[in-house]
Image 1 (spheres, rainbow, N blue to C red):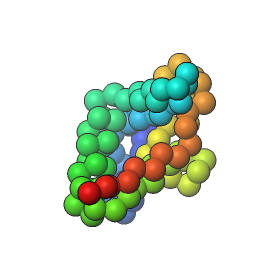
Image 2: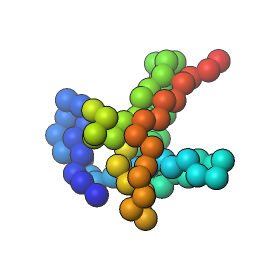
Image 3: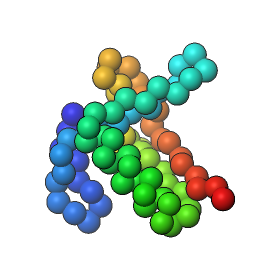
Image 4: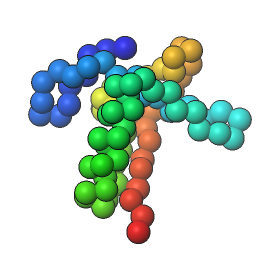
Length: 84
């Protein structure tokens, strides 16, 4: 895992947050810091009532890990939409 930087802020705790599509299911891997980060992202989404793109570093983001904990390629972009 790497030390991440929130946009406009200093370094934060290393976070594991990855998504993998396999056998018709979405597998989400996260650690305690990843849970906190995902909750924060969802709370921001609730406040803005819009959508958010979670990206790997290679896709221009910083929210998602490139690999799963097992070293497999993870999903490079996750889009979460707020729906009323």
